Image (cartoon, rainbow, N blue to C red; front, side, top):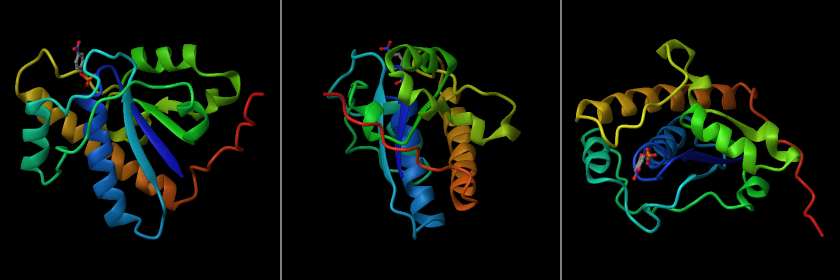
Length: 166
Ligand code: 4NP
């Protein structure tokens, strides 16, 4: 199972999702082989590590994001990943526009796996205050636990492979 988390810049929300889900799934689903990655729909920060505020907030909860580097969603991601989970509706719409028809059913919102949190979107913390980064972590930890439960229950299945063009 290959899972890609997507936000706008790939320096706040989606690298947090990558690091947190990797840690929680390794603990809760050690028997599953998961490939976990993240990317942005915009390229403003390509090659950069996660935002310092993101790294510090994650480190306070025991997640080390320092080795991650921002990249942009590429066309081949729609073939490589079984599940492509956006942090908000704006980025989900961008993915829906860019993805081929055969990959549309791989796209979704990460917070669909955390119905109890009362929102479907992880808000962008980039221009906000310090509390935003803690809230992002709260939401992402909840959705990571929910996604692990769904995977354990067999409720998430890899779709049939998309045949390569050409
Ligand atoms: P992210 O946050 O999408 O969670 O990585 C952002 C980071 C940078 C920008 C916007 C959002 N920016 O406009 O540079």
